Length: 363
Image 1 (cartoon, one colour):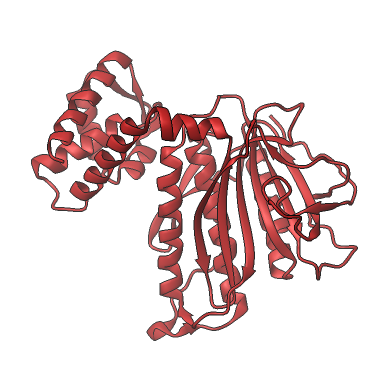
Image 2 (cartoon, one colour):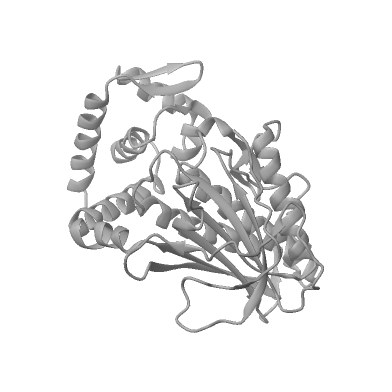
């Protein structure tokens, strides 16, 4: 496994070159292609997240940029984790903003390279005020990396607003990632063999000679486009605002994914959303009740196996002891070297159907 940086020369790219209905102003862009199953990355060491004393407003652009950078990292890692770009073993847990979040093992060569692309490349452009947009693209064919199956577009814009405290911005980051997570949970699974690329676009004030570290200037690289017969389906996921700048996030997927999700399986999707909302409601209530135990069991049975005990507990938001107890009560789930796995898929699916029916009766 390796990271391959395709050395494009400089050229002018349109900022949203396969989505816009009108011709946007062209911007210089950088591009890096990340090949092979790279571990995902979560917030860098040294990123400072401090609550201001007495909820004082966050007034400096420097503080807001730290929130902007960490928000992009959190979102990119969440996308990679939920879309199974990288194996679960590539992720660790880190405490950030009073919440456990995913982080990369920096001892891994590929993880370290991706970290450098973000910390030293993307963040350098943010600090200098040059970054306009960063695109995380997922593609299936290494011979056609411009043909994407999914595209996550982070657009940075000015955002003159009322001063906010560090605590309120922290809450906004949590809301931003929670809403992103809800959308990711509804997407269909991707093929096992897939890769990612990062492409960045500059603002018009960027010097002609500027090149983001760990990126190559693009020329004759071809326009990014979604593999779709019709116009790609666009989802405006969310917007994170600071007193100075904002990040808007949009997802683009092929039209056939739209049909699969919203036409053919509409009723099943609606039932699934209602069921998961009910599970969230139960888990937010008093622990230890029959409904709470049932909801925990449903979440554990819905995990993607194999998975480490630590990751399972984090995903379900329960203790490792609870995970072990469920495994002991269900022989088709086994634990070996702190890894949770399934030995009988048919029994797992049957148990999951039973819990789903019981929870549906509570709707």
